[in-house]
Amino acid sequence: MTATRVLVLNSGSSSLKYQLLDMRDSSRLATGFVERIGERTSRLKHTALTTGETRETTGPVADHAAALKAVSEELGRDGLGLDSPDLAAIGHRVVHGGSSFTEPVIVDDAVIAEIERLIPVAPLHNPANLTGIRTARSLRPDLPQVAVFDTAFHTTMPESAARYAIDVSTADEYRIRRYGFHGTSHAYVSRETAKLLGKAPGDVNVIVLHLGNGASASAVREGRCVDTSMGLTPLEGLVMGTRSGDVDPAVIFHLARVGGMSTDEIDTLLNKKSGLIGLCGDNDMREIRRRVDEGDEQARLAFDIYIHRLKKYIGAYYAVLGRVDAIAFTAGVGENAAAVREAAVAGLEGLGLAVDAGLNAARGDGARIVSPEGARVAVAVVPTDEELEIATQTYALVGASHDLT
Ligand code: ADP
Figure 1 (cartoon, rainbow, N blue to C red):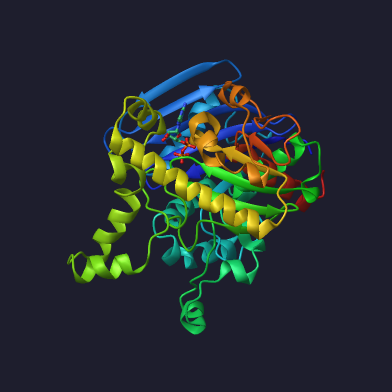
Figure 2: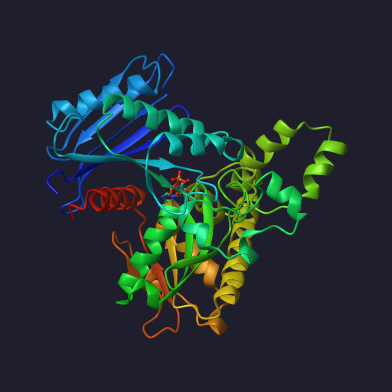
């Protein structure tokens, strides 16, 4: 195909992040973001990786349409504009694809209607994602727009893992089930882990631990996700920066009945004021480790709770998979915090799990193995790249649909 560039857009409620990639060699041509959209102090930061030049502008950007126009102008100044014939497609990150979207799709009116129908299960994310899609469509109506869903990789989960044990008709009526998130990261990292082991994805079983500010684990059997820790929403599972992860659902009734809290207050408590920040006042693992090293007991307890939960999921997914070839740590904490990796597998030698202290502590950019030579299970650090995964899926779909690859 002649057009080889893909623009990846990640639209949040008040932000727009973007990357322009050339799919001939997966290289980055430009990257940037607009933040505080709708405020007087919106900020656009654009870096042209072709020249290394960075430009920043501050001033009111009214809405996503204006933001994307500004981004297009910045790209245009580097000869990379949305009107370029080299642009093959725009790939949009869409957080919730429900059960309907098992793969990326080319956006049409029916796709937009379905993403809209899913707003009740993703009230914060899907509307912002839709705004990005609509804006991009209006600017380049002729260009294929592809929606890549955070939930898609998890749609292979068996019913036994995807269903909550609650009344079936109620669950079905309200579409309550475990969807999972961070799917593009879990897909990318599980494949890269197989590559690191010199094997095909279909030949390995991997536990992926995506530990960023949001955090999730997944069990991937022979390239297909069979379980993941996030559920109906990204609140379930691991202890996160500001989210509680798993709690007894009765905590919510208790807070309402005894604490007199409203649904919105409990939502805010569990999503924004819990996890590491709720436990110790910090959600940055660097700061928490610094405090632990200084003997801070509160930070120590937060770290221990975080690790205890992580370990439980490693054990659970080990049991789900039966045989594990690798555990892959990824995202901000997983890629950088050696202390987290070390503590997460400490004492699990019986399961064939250990890190080599030297390898684990060494800094490195690419994917690497940090378990001792000859270990039964490889412990790996695998940097995630959600934008590349979105671009790759987008390009593959556009190429296939035009039969041009
Ligand atoms: P998200 O995309 O969910 O916002 P990231 O994957 O970028 O998150 O991860 C952000 C988190 O990574 C930070 O909150 C911080 O806790 C952690 N982090 C980043 N760098 C380091 C580091 N060098 N050591 C420990 N933790 C780090």
